[in-house]
Length: 245
Ligand SMILES: Nc1nc2c(ncn2[C@@H]2O[C@H](COP(=O)(O)OP(=O)(O)OP(=O)(O)O)[C@@H](O)[C@H]2O)c(=O)[nH]1
Ligand SMILES: [Mg+2]
Image (cartoon, rainbow, N blue to C red; front, side, top):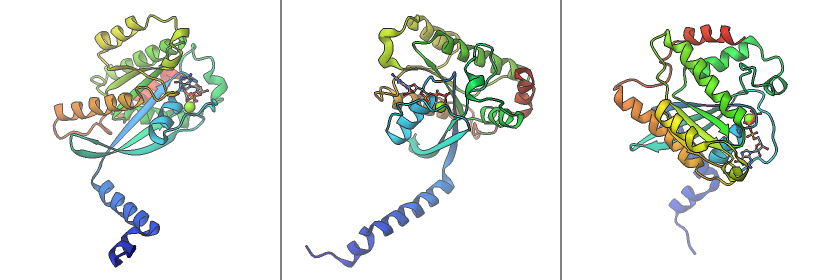
């Protein structure tokens, strides 16, 4: 079938890739940036959830995350394009309950902890993951939340949205946790959205990140003209980091 010049020009793979990259560059200059930090105890599936959402594949083997990794994707909300950075940071070994963290991230340096603290303090939203088969993993996010809120209380409060997710829903037959009660606590007492999901089967993974996006955009529209990024003073967390060492 004869092809026009126009077709020839626009359809070569190199050209289309290049023009897509140029288009993305142009768009990303105007895009608002959302930084979402994913937190939780070791092995709850933080990396698996991000990989599933961004790359549509499930990582079967557990490779403990030893340094921060940022996954970038573009999303649309309220007819606006956003650059969404999902930040996968190594487990913060702040809690005595987190016995496995010291194995996963031996000797985390002060600088590393400090940079994780900065990521948390400047995030657009935080996603707390627990494993629905592990009581300790829920205790971990409970302690983490309390510690973060304690740190920021003195600084006028913490208003970065937190979304809580119970991962490994495919293993619910093995779960002995009172999940209905947990979801009530999270929604009514913590006033946070709650999602159960499975990175393995891609169940509700999209809903989880959509909840985060919704929480951020709702918060931003309530605070006209303010973006969530970089609103929280670092010194609040510096103070907090001292107490976790
Ligand atoms: N059955 C099941 N296994 C899962 C699911 N999500 C993750 N896993 C498994 O759980 C293990 C840990 O997953 P990771 O994503 O590496 O966990 P992580 O929270 O990033 O772990 P750290 O980086 O060490 O903190 C891996 O073997 C995954 O295959 C899930 O939804 N269902
Ligand atoms: Mg990981």
